[in-house]
Image 1 (tube, rainbow, N blue to C red):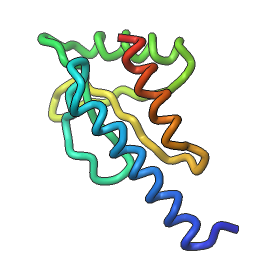
Image 2 (cartoon, rainbow, N blue to C red; image 1 turned 45 degrees about the horizontal axis):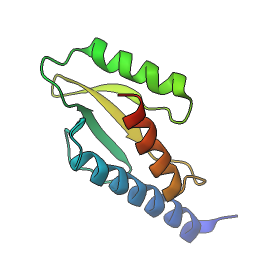
Image 3 (cartoon, helix red, strand yellow; image 1 turned 120 degrees about the horizontal axis):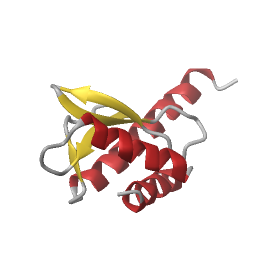
Image 4 (spheres, rainbow, N blue to C red; image 1 turned 60 degrees about the vertical axis):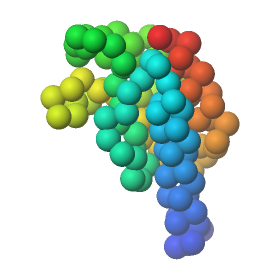
Length: 107
């Protein structure tokens, strides 16, 4: 019962939330953006030398076990990476804050 404009609003909100997380990552010492965020997916990695896929896996396990957020592993141009995808109609700007706090707490 959302109609075309309702779904447009959901997509626009999810894209704004991705931009919100992108801003946090761009100003962080712990993370590094790997690609521009054009829509609802943020692609980034941990910001340390000699990064291995096992580093991403260990970090994502800590994040999953923390229970506040679920992000997924990926690879971008051969670099082990993390993907945050915003696609839920219930996600709010406060959820992005919670995500950012969890990401830092699990470092």
